[in-house]
Length: 351
Length: 111
Image (tube, rainbow over all chains, first blue to last red; front, side, top):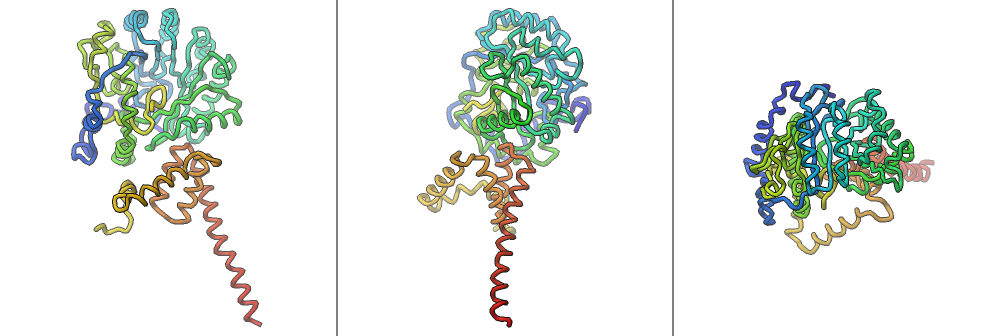
């Protein structure tokens, strides 16, 4: 288990251009597999265009208390890219006037941004309908100063979405680090205690599942049932929904795929499972992703590949929703990750 | 012609058997799909049965397919190994129970 980000290790894959090179060469260059553009052209879905904007996803920084094996952000304690107050203020202006119904804060561990609480307080005043914070759970137990986060979330009506790769200790710790499972269980108990995730509670607590290796997620509903049954029986834990998310071949997961010689087979699996119905609902069609330094992207994955929106407006300080909506979405072979099987998004399956 | 009897890449081509007999191939895959749907048994239970049988049949394609299927369904490696032992126990039991036949013959012939 690594304790440093790829960036801190000076790993080749930390370079986004290198990642794009890998994704365009090999089995795609020799035409063993069709490119994503070719595939969506077959069903007249090229170029991919936005629909109504529903989600504004803001990345508050790449700093994290964990160094998970497959992190697409390459997050970790050594990453110091953190959103400033100035950029947060630009974001707040946008949140006030956006047509989007959902605000989705992510990271890294967004709670580690020193201005996180101020930002949540300000954003919650704007009357946004669904206010999500993506919490990795362990942060709540990482330090005393985070222990009251469940109450803080509750006070501001935050919808908590948390990663838990498996309901067994072995599989979770292998992916996210030793001790992560026990801490996550403690954090879930704290959230339940203030009302999060309880049956009929308005305090939403959803979990995110992603596979622990080079395979696709199974049926989301079946996995949710298994998680609910096991977490209830073993720890008396409640939660609302489970989102099954496919691992995309970028950053640390790409590094893992190549190092374990799974890259070609995994890409073949994604392409074989291509589902044109999922293309209709991929999240880039209803989301704008904002990076820690205020740049705009079609999704969090494009952000990590440094593929900015194909628009005159590329920064939150110049935000213009109408102009932005009139753009072509930037695609590459990693997009096969969102269109495999039942599809995948930050809200789980899409088809 | 491949130098090996088995090639992992052939699993992806399984669907092609329909090309040489559309009717029977389609009927088979339709049946196959239905068998593995959620029923009185869960899809998860069926996947574990398939994994055990894949081993007793010693079919490398099936082992590949149902190990991956198990991972996708969140089945743990401990559960998978137990399923393989169930298959192995039946296999060895099936061998050993024939020992009774041997005993019967010895008892009849050897005074």
